[in-house]
Image (cartoon, rainbow, N blue to C red):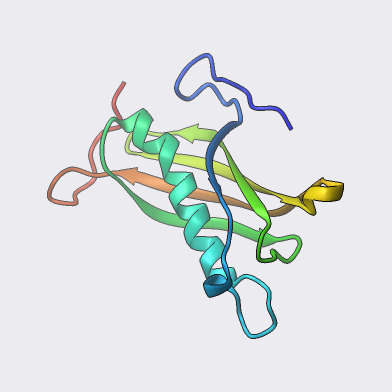
Length: 133
């Protein structure tokens, strides 16, 4: 697994923005991690680069696509990678990939989720504002 450092804050390079391990409280009755928990983590991870780029508050305005590729289990170490795909006047769109490290004794890494989300830069009153140049 490689981590790319961007040449600019929104240069389109994939960046590691969050790592987390789901715990038993995050699991459903089948023992898999709730999809809603994963969606919340993706939303947090997806907001990191837009907040940097806009130099302030952002709010999720759209979940353009969300695909669960494999179940997530308790104890998987999840790495969330974000790539800025578009910067508009007031919004930033991000692609997030979630990779799971499984079975530490026989380590393998699999993509479990990917999503495209759009965030809008907002001011203190919650109104949209221009993304910082």
